[in-house]
Length: 171
Image (tube, rainbow, N blue to C red; front, side):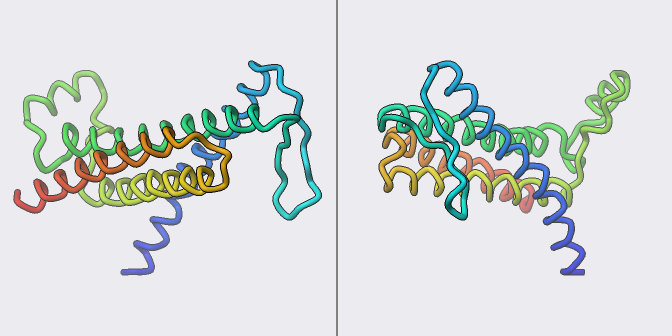
């Protein structure tokens, strides 16, 4: 039983990880093009990286690409929380089910098990991206305000998730 749950979490964690990684990559490429920045791709270390001609460009590109990556992670968790609040099979009204059926949208109705798995994955990514941003602040490559915003939003999203879980347990 536990191994099946673990395998499902790993399976469901890959797609969100790819989405978050692509969001960061897209933001870096977009910001480099938008700024017309001079950059260089370094492959000499174990982890390939992008280098800029000046520190201000690095600070700007890294800060805003981290912010975009974080927003994508929060949107994933927000979608799960929206499904948990409005489309959870345990507390959806029969009238709303009929309305979804008429629109051919019954596929968005979710079970507790599905919501739990998706919630754990996106919740983990929200906090991992917050820690990632914090590490970038410590290395001086991201604005402090990005970390403060990420921390505050992560706390609020955690509160929403815990509130929904408490509501589910009480029901």
